[in-house]
Image 1 (cartoon, rainbow, N blue to C red):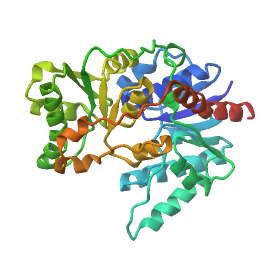
Image 2: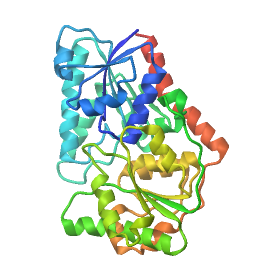
Image 3: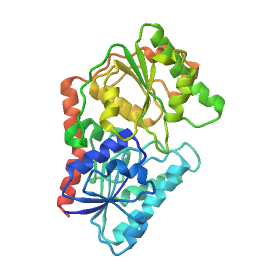
Image 4: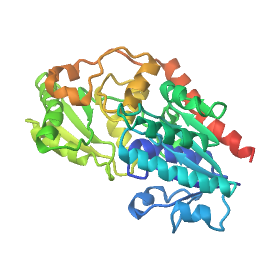
Length: 364
């Protein structure tokens, strides 16, 4: 049994919650310890006997007398450097990794991706922090080839690349829930929206194309529109859902779906869709897994990197370019679908994240 300090994006976010649940189910023999100021978010995972809540922060734990075997950061965008806030986060992680190494604690990042550095005069600072962050880690797994190429320059021999962890989601086995099969109920359009901060005028210009696409879908004979919020924590998509809903004319044929920690209930709604406009990264992954025709809307490089790895060459408009585009393009779904064999292969390869982790922990 290993004692592992675990950090993840605890924000009532569907994709991250699925990954965490899969980790805890995969390693029942190990003890995981987390720190969070939000007991509400932690309550989602109280069903797992191998997850424990800390009363003090990670730095105090690493510098204290309690012994841990590893410090594990799980999640997708945990190696992002696209903003000053991301840079500050990485500096804090460097401090934690230094403290961990002094105490003989192994440091690892599982299931991550990274981004382009800013094209500014201060980019050298980002590169230096990135170099330190990678060098201080003992094990890294990433979910796209772009991230692998960038990280392996500084982390050769300890960096591994596999498809996103969620591709290996197996319903009851991995998350303690039944994994519903795709069973569309007529012509149902799902829309994954994303909270975009800015002036009220700019927000309206970003959200309006989704409302226009929903109205057009219903006018063409569609039965229902599902507006989905994949994150209802700090990075809350609920506001965006309500803004899009406010702009739709036929509100009586629109259903609002907010993720509240119930993975099975949310996925059951998602699997009723016959097509999907995907903004959130894991909306795209889950649409691929359910073989739902989709239109990807790019809000971050990680979405584009995923599509590139899959060989997708169809339309993929940028979120901020939508106001100047024809809303009808959001309904022109490319016939790109992963076949059963490709999905099976992606699921098997995605388990590599935890296979590599298991091998490393067994060697401690």
